[in-house]
Length: 104
Image (tube, rainbow, N blue to C red; front, side):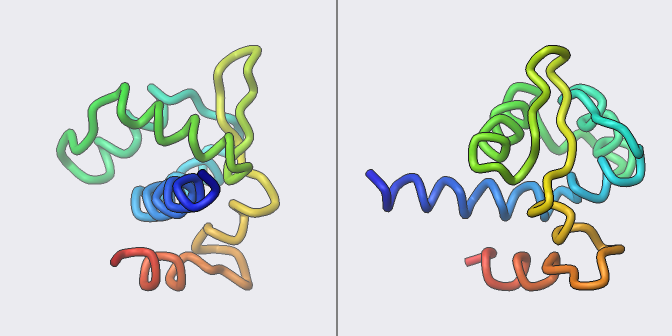
């Protein structure tokens, strides 16, 4: 079971990094809901790449693994100390590393 969960954690890490979710939350400078994140991603990519329910599941999984913080009272997501390293602006950003080594 642990191995299966590690794979899910790895995929959640890859997806939030590839979709620039930590950068999106950082730029907003406030917690964002799944719907708000999806709207921003759609606008930045210029098309509708994701189903909302799929994105919400990714965000929920990322929160489960403490890659994001989920504020259950208003269903919004914010950065954790871990996800701060996944932003492009962090001086010790691991964003490129994650994208390179998680893409296989």
